[in-house]
Length: 248
Image (cartoon, rainbow, N blue to C red; front, side, top):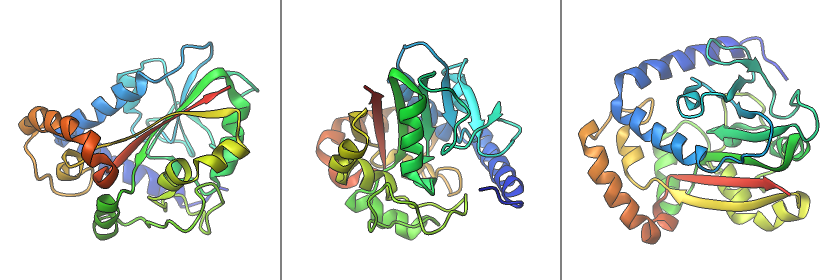
């Protein structure tokens, strides 16, 4: 479904994000490390790598030949692609990349159906999404405008299909709490990795909309501390998760 006001609001939001991106070296460093992590999980089977909901399309800084797409035309995207009705032939895509997209999907099951259809055998869905741990759930509820709702199963169509709305818990519910349902409904999409990450550096960076609480120069030492603490603290305190599905 398209909304006549959606492209304007999308572009305006992305222009705000672009200003933040250009002004905040710490934010750029964090996202580029995430891009590198996601790129390391991509499949090398034949076919294009497609980013859905590409936003500012910065993933191409790490993967230059990625096809950058969004739900409506924007100045940064290469093509218009609806995640629930992709214009690709069966078994023709090597990778689907989603950064902060799954939790916005109004019909996650429809996307997973499409992923199963368009991916080559051995192709992958690589997602980096908000993770709702006990600590981050509290922080998201206080500081973020999007809902944190654990009531669904992570796959059922949302009540609202307004594009800029979302449920920050949707990825956590789908892939950490309902992984058995995922395996039952989409056995061809094997969950090959789910990893909690990002404890305190990202929230202290302020993201795209809050005031940064860390100088850019603090990133390297604090990231090293975060990595060392992550095996112990991530289940209780992670703000992000990496999800990798592989078409079998």
